[in-house]
Image 1: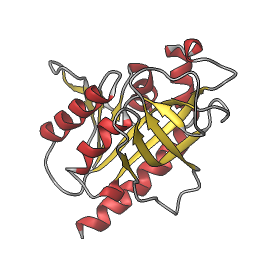
Image 2: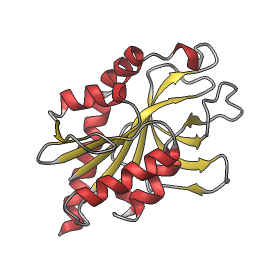
Image 3: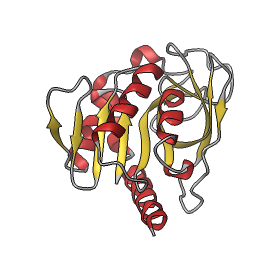
Image 4: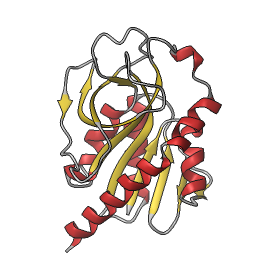
Length: 200
C-alpha cells in the first residue's frame, strides 16, 4: 500500500489520472482518492495542513505496517533547472531548526537534495537546497505509521532565480508533475517492493 500526500489539486491531477485513483470519500475536510493499492490525500498548503492530512489518511485507511508514504510536490531552488526532480535526503524545518534524514533508496537513479520547509514562499534561496512548505509536517507524522525508509519526499523544481514563485500557475504545476511521472512511478514501485519485504 502506498499513501501519497500532496498539497495542491494541480499536483494531484496528473497522479489521479496516471494511477487511476477515484474520489471515495466525498465529505472529508481533505479530499481522499483511492484504488486497491494506493491512497492520495490533498492537504492544502503548509506544514500544519500536511501533518493533519497525513494523520487523517492514516486513520481512515486499514492500519498495517506495510504502508509506504510519499510526499510529492513542487519546490524552489536557487539554480536547479525547472522541471528537474529530486528525492529529499535531508529535511529541515526552517522555523525550528529540527531536521530528519530519510534513509535513501540506493537502487534509484533519481538525484537527491537537501530540503528546507518554510512558512511562506521563498524567493531568495539563501542556501543550495530545495524550498517548499509541507515536508516537515508530513515526515514526522508519517514516520509514526511506518518504517523510516518507507517514508520519502519527491519534489519537482517549479521556481528558481530566473523564474519566480509568482510565475507558478496551476497549469504549470500540473505540467511539471506530469513530466516526472516516470520517476514517480519508479519510486512508487521501489517503495512497494520494500513494503512487501517488510511484511515478510
